[in-house]
Image 1 (tube, one colour):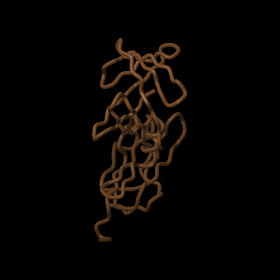
Image 2: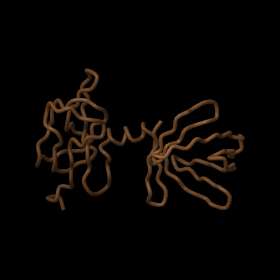
Image 3: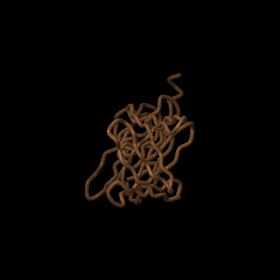
Image 4: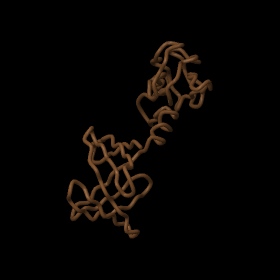
Length: 173
């Protein structure tokens, strides 16, 4: 499974694959490492990484992990593939600045229900993507004005492709 790890302003992609019981291959920024580990049930992990043994204290609070190794403590935000897919479906909503609607999966652009310059309301349909013979109606994550459309109707798209970008409506300010 793929994870996005963020700590102190640095974000990396980690792919974790089980090799056998209690042994995993962890690939971070293209560098594979074999990790053997065992949980002790009291919030401690006993890990063997590249011939070195570590006792690691871990706890989680709403997607943020606190990890203690010796005298060092790290806070790491962890997002898995599902969380990133939900963000793509919701349009990556933010309180200010442009909001984008991404394709949540590979497919084909069937239609746009908006044009550049259109005013849209939060929750209104903005695009339709067909994937696996199902049409998925994508909605605006916020109100604003459409400032950009992605690939043309009929184009094939990958998951994460920008379809619609929505900015604040300057006329309201």
